[in-house]
Length: 112
Image (cartoon, rainbow, N blue to C red; front, side, top):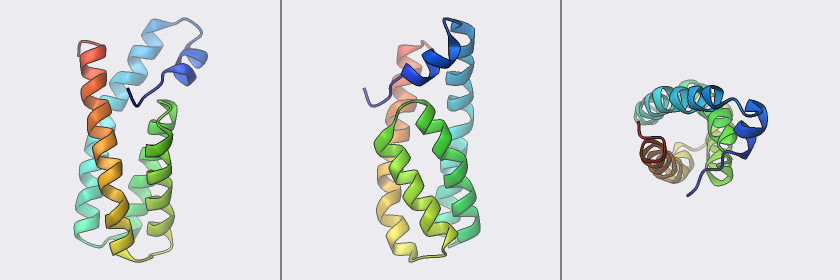
């Protein structure tokens, strides 16, 4: 399991509906953002790469996905600085693999 619900559970203070809501929002938004990020990479759109990585980062952070957060931060920084697109493309597969794995795990664990 590469996600951890400690932060969400702490915020929820026992409110299961809140936890389920956060998970649902993650499952709705993050895969879409990931697809858009992949498209932005294909078009070498640094600004869009920056914006989407910036949007993904707090979502993966909330789920305690430290490696994934680090990948999103690196992509965000490289996109903001209009850095080497090849460098971003090296980091992106880690982000994509982790997010896809967590989406699958969350759907299974929460019966969604």
